[in-house]
Image (cartoon, rainbow, N blue to C red; front, side, top):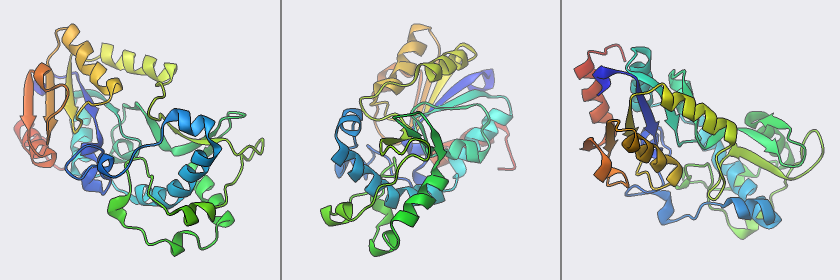
Length: 272
């Protein structure tokens, strides 16, 4: 399938686990201990929003330190050698871009930016984090964080006491506390302009390769349904069972890193 080129790659949390970011549904997935914040909660419950930012202030710095792993670099190599038309990722960690992939669409957004829900102003997450640190001196140092407990969206469990001790900052433009990371929450729709970007990439592609995703979320599974409807080949590489397995032309149930090693070797891609 890759030798025929113009393959669209769809990735999930499984490609980032070797970078120290846990997945949601794997053997040690975060959903076993954590229920992600929903869009409705974030928008309509100020206490839930305050709790999110306290937890994210601690957990995001772990995600921010993460580096691309072999799988990210392998996918970038496939793109640079012309086998892959582009990457749509369900991840919000930005690691595909850091690895060198150039045609990347973060389907669910990117943690690197924060947007004001009141006036629409956007702020770089690192600058935002510096402002949070100034408002909360010594806060992170007082918390004993287990890196394995950090969730894929940078969230981490905190005690009620730690949440109450957290001081939230406001928008630099309008002074509102209604600030949101530039990511799509559970229950929120993918922005229209991003859907159009995805459609254009899909139109440029002739087949679909899913890597490291169980496709449990409809926004990802829809790629498989659309490829099936268009009579396109579908490949899936994943360590565990997934929603699209029965529709796959090629199903490879294996660990992702060794699989990608074999893929690059078979295509004669070296220097990775």
